[in-house]
Length: 361
Image 1 (spheres, rainbow, N blue to C red):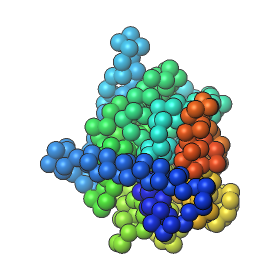
Image 2 (image 1 turned 135 degrees about the vertical axis):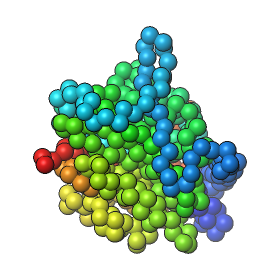
Image 3 (image 1 turned 45 degrees about the horizontal axis):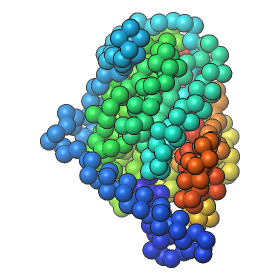
């Protein structure tokens, strides 16, 4: 997000205008400035929060109670012997950054969730789905909690922003057929943007614990860089001897040379590369195709969104999703296009999905 903000502002300052696009810059500039200001004002003072930086902070997750018509808190069982069964042998992990800075938050999230519903509804009964979202705001959590298909089929990890350090954060949806044995968030000590790593342990494949991490790594090319120490925090918990395997995914903001080797440097595998994907190729890019026209022309595309894994989990497939998912209402479409987009896309990121199964001992 802040990388995108920096790009927009630098273009305005350098007067890199196309005559017909000047107004787009100033409209986007106003939106960006407003988003940055609101985010800065929303940062919670350290003396007001329950967590400590770089330390795991347990949190509840929630199941929808149809009798009470409300989301009810659940505590992680901590017991790997409580596997529910259901014949689940595989895991489909979806990760998507839905831009929080654009207007029409509810309308855009409605469409994002409808797209995810369509994708997950095609999974075979033996595959459980987990959905990671980044750049969510409180309105998004309300929207998520309203959906009948989510109420019926998923646990949600957040119903408000109490576990985030600022006004936006990460949240995870977990297939209700899976047992959750641990749920904790680690707020990074080294962060300028209140980022964290959010972990959920599930039981899969006959009592085997798989640790899932949803994270939004630091944006921009500041010095010193914070993505390497943040990934070191993530990998500390991924390499836990008590878990059978681990998968981390999210918006990794991979924009510098060192980002290409973060997985190797930390003993992890990159799902896209493991299946033969190549860097600097259209097949791998997840950001830029749906950015404003000027940003794409100026900065090109990049592979920001990734899936890393470790341990005894077998990668079966990796794909992108979410291309050309657009607003449908004519007035809403016009509003987004007026900001400088070729099409009324709901977010500037493509999502990524990876399928896994646990390996035999």
